[in-house]
Length: 97
Image (cartoon, rainbow, N blue to C red; front, side, top):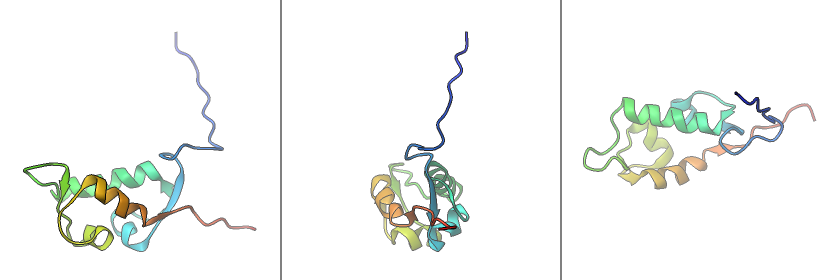
């Protein structure tokens, strides 16, 4: 028997929360607002498409020019990348007030 679960969209968790992205990040992810999880997914799509993961250790990222605009040049771990990407994410601006 399948149980129906209602989702409360009025207070989404962090992954589903709508965010805006900086112009540099939008070059990779597209314009926001979008869910934070979608931002992460699109960054990883870019990393895989351009083969930016180190072959020796997939946890290390070697940024291309577009990603370097966000995280800087030089190798970094995926955890360091997350901290730098967070600086390019913000809550969407509210209009109509």
